[in-house]
Amino acid sequence: MSNNKQHSPFQRVLRRELQRMVSRRLYFGVCIVLSLFCIFFMSTIFGNGQMENIPVGIVDKDQTALSRELIRQVEAVPTFRVTRHYVDEEKARQATQAKEIYGYLVIPNQFEQDVTGGTSTTLSYYYHYALLSVGGEVRGAFENLLRTFSTTPIVVQAVAQGISQKEISTFLVPIKAQNHPLFNPDLDYSVYLSNPFFFIFFQVIILLTTVYAVGSELKFHTSDDWLATAGMNMVTALFGKLLPYTVIFSLMSILGNYVMFGLMNIPFSCGFLLLNLTAVLFVIASQALAVFLFSLFPAISIIISIVSMVGSLGATLSGVTFPAASMYAPVYFTSFLFPVRHFVEINQNPLYGDYGFAYTWWNFSALGCFILVAFLMVPHLKRAILSHKYDNIK
Image (cartoon, rainbow, N blue to C red; front, side):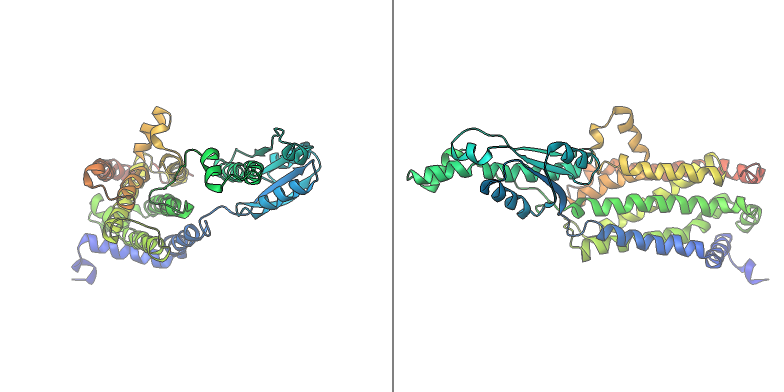
């Protein structure tokens, strides 16, 4: 009896797939190099986690000592980097529209005269709001700066009249607001974006790799040998083929968790075990989605474009950048068809308080449904492979 027959069909398929992976550098590049790049990219893209040195401009129509003092205060704000001074608002507006700068401050004529004379004056600022995050940062920085600066003349006059600082603060700010951002007190972008965005990009890699691994059997006309090695059992063929990728992607997702929550010190409320188990379930569910989509139309040239679109939509429908519940109703319900949507819901539970399984059980169930649906499509996939009618589609 040969050594090949001493092994079970599953072992033979597994060994066959490992040989295919080793024989082509493409698999190493996609599974290892590209995954490591995603971890590195998402752990470094946000820098120190704050938006700093955003280019802004100044339109100083007053050219006085007070206007220059205001400009110095603008330059001292870490969010801003004053790159240009403009002589009129039209050029500043054009620069903002061209995204040479993301906002500008207009200091009007007779600004110092009006301030020292007790006359009301207006400081105007404009910002580019097509990019919501950048526009929000610029607006917030301008508001904080100008709110403080606007009270300076009042404080000076009140002190000159013998009013104490405590009394001044009482009538200037009768209600004091205290902000306590939960789970992210430093308002660090990497805390709530690095981890989910990594898995959003990672899902695209998983989908494409899974589709290619299965579809290449049809593309290179080796599907009959694949099924024969598996004893004509389609479930065994899929398990043996996809297991190496499952192991690699699971290890990469676990490494990503340790880099972001360990080395980067992103705060979380649970242990690594739950995070890693959730990541492994996400990997399996994403592979199941890829198998389901490929089973619908087993033509690799077409399905790769489809899974690329599906993976890209995960960035929008995951609910990370915009609350899913506030989306248009059909889009909101469509988001449930993406594994990354449920993964984000599950992951945010232990990260932001660990509220218990009762809040996310249905998300776990949804990820399990992706696996179940893929199993239901296995007979159709087997018939499509045996028919060979998709082999020559370009």
